[in-house]
Each structure stands twice: as structure tokens, then as C-alpha cells.
Length: 137
Image (tube, rainbow, N blue to C red; front, side, top):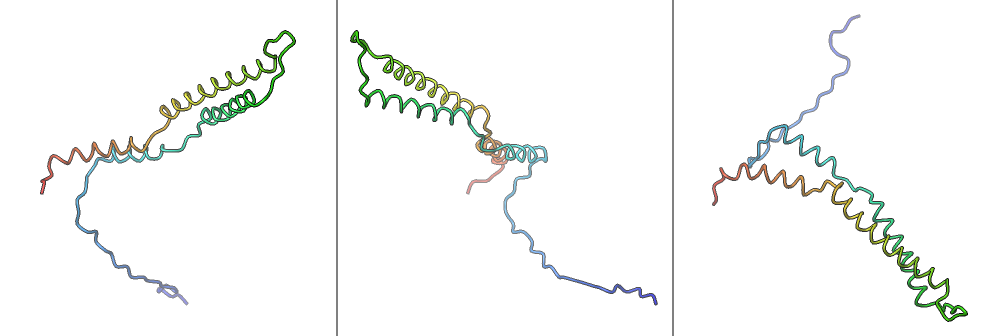
């Protein structure tokens, strides 16, 4: 017994809604691909210099607080104690290193980050190409 008709038939009707009329920018596929690539590269880069700088500046702050709040004993000849000198050296060194880490973190962010402003700039170039033909109302 052979049946030429399918044993299971399913249909569904779709109503296609036409798009509303509006202005559009026809751009070459190369530019569209360029914009997509730039958008894909936008990300939040972990900035280890900035994190390290914050931690080191925290050490520096702790050392400075220790300098101002602790009573360091004077040595027998009346000069500063070795503990005070070591604490002061740690405070100054960590302050300098932490500031440098923040500086390098800022430079790293400027060099590595692809910003959304880059993509918007390219889109502005595309818009400018079509502005010369627009009529101002």
C-alpha cells in the first residue's frame, strides 16, 4: 500500500510587514565590515598597572599614618631611630612607585583601548559623505 500524499502536513501563515519609509545611508560592505570589526574589539581591558598602583599607594598611606601617629624612640646619640628611617623610606618609595604605576596604567589605557568614539568617528565620516545632498528645511 503506497500513499503519495505525506502523512503529516503542517502550515503556518505569516503576514509580512513592509518597512516604513525613511532615510538610509547606503554604505559599501567594506565599511560595514570595518565598523563591525571595530565594535567587536571594544572591550574592558584589565589594567594591572592601575590595580597595582592602588595597592602600593595603600601601603604608602599606611606607612605615612604610622610615621605621624607612632612615637619612635630616639637613638642614644639623639638622632632618628632606624625604625623611623625605614618607615619613612618605605612611605616615600611606595608613594613614588604607586604614582608611577598609575601613570603607566593611564598610558596603557590610552594605547590599548579601542573606544566607542573611534566607531562613532567613522560613522560621522559616512554621514558627512551624504550631508552635501541633503536639503535643509
